[in-house]
Length: 197
Image 1 (tube, one colour):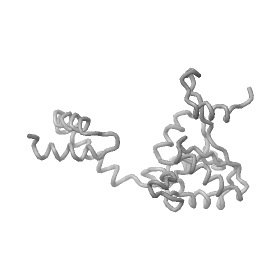
Image 2 (cartoon, one colour; image 1 turned 60 degrees about the vertical axis):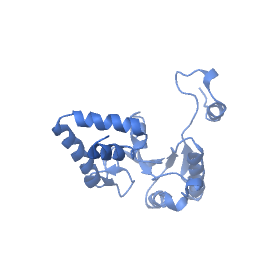
Image 3 (cartoon, rainbow, N blue to C red; image 1 turned 45 degrees about the vertical axis):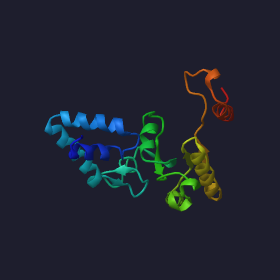
Image 4 (cartoon, rainbow, N blue to C red; image 1 turned 180 degrees about the vertical axis):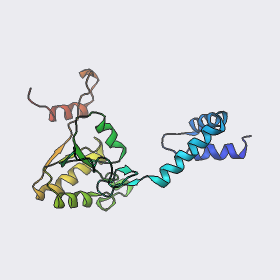
């Protein structure tokens, strides 16, 4: 029989995405074995993120300063906006060190099956930024799945009348991959996104 405080911790950990019962149990027992100071540091980090982190009023990125570090950086090209579904997608693009523009976080993707419609994502904020600024290009970097594709098409449709160049990230074969392992959709996207060399 598991002690109620331990059972409660396991139960709370299972509420995290990707954490099932076994993983939650391993994490709970790990926390239990660690020194009290580490448990307190973890608890404080959780409290800090809930009380000190908020959405940037310009781009919806998660930040502890207003505006966020990307929006307030004068070295960024504010005329190019990369549109992503969630704030955590920004770090993936930033790791390349190739993108010098700014971001706009939609806060989700269209998914009629989940009841998520255009009113549930922040396309209006993107349109306002385009109306208010000198935007040259919007790069749509939504996920390459059904919801991401539907969202990309919706955004492109909304931007059509603005005259802003609208592009979509290319999808296809990973570097170092073998053609024989590519599925039909990946191969189709690779052909579609081909470029001259």
